[in-house]
Image 1: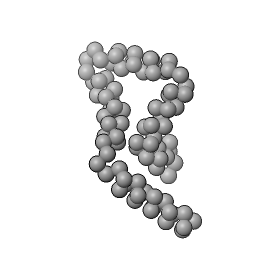
Image 2: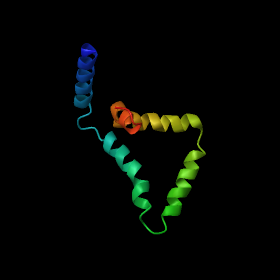
Image 3: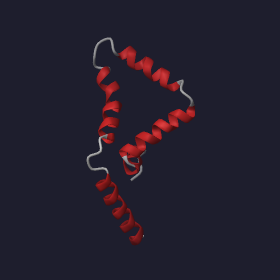
Image 4: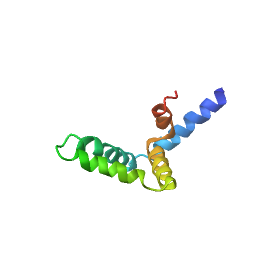
Length: 86
């Protein structure tokens, strides 16, 4: 287990170093927060609702792809926390 933890730490350091200067995390964060901001603007809540309804109509494979892209941008450990795992 100690060896696995060491490899995980090294992998995280490598990934952190390789993503320096990358804007994809910020882009994903902005895109995710846009609907949150829009629901506070009068009249925009219907636009957000319609958008989510349209997203649910997309093929399953595309919805999974969007989830995977966001997971990759935010990091797998971040998704584990989101799902309630530690």
